[in-house]
Image (cartoon, rainbow, N blue to C red; front, side, top):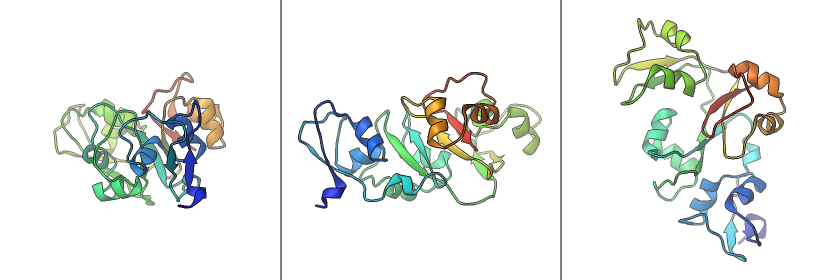
Length: 208
């Protein structure tokens, strides 16, 4: 085993800090090491992914935090990628997810609009929030007379090619996100129409 691709657990270590320090995610670490929980033992040897995440920053992936009710199929559908791509990108050996897991979502290198298919439970408000667009803009682009949606309807999401998207993770703040992407808090607030600096885990924000 290449010593550059392993990590030996020390006292007070946790998966979040190890993932952060090695530019990866909790989900990838758990999948790579066949971990069923977040509990670690001192001296435990963890494999680290060979491909460094910073090589992908800032343009070809976003990070998604798994929420209650999520599964790989629904996440792949939400982001219009194949299940195979999602599994391969995260080096997952199974389809089992845990709340709080972090997944890398590959971004398609295209300026074309996104086509979103309405699923049970979707609302115009939730779709607009997910893709950081106003409800009025969605209605105008899709010629919708009201806010009512039908399951199976294809909704056009305009391309945000001048921006990249980022999914807020545990312990993130606007300051840390701005620092990560070498931008400013004010720019992020302006682009996302944020009135305060408060962000929520799982929230999708645009990054200039």
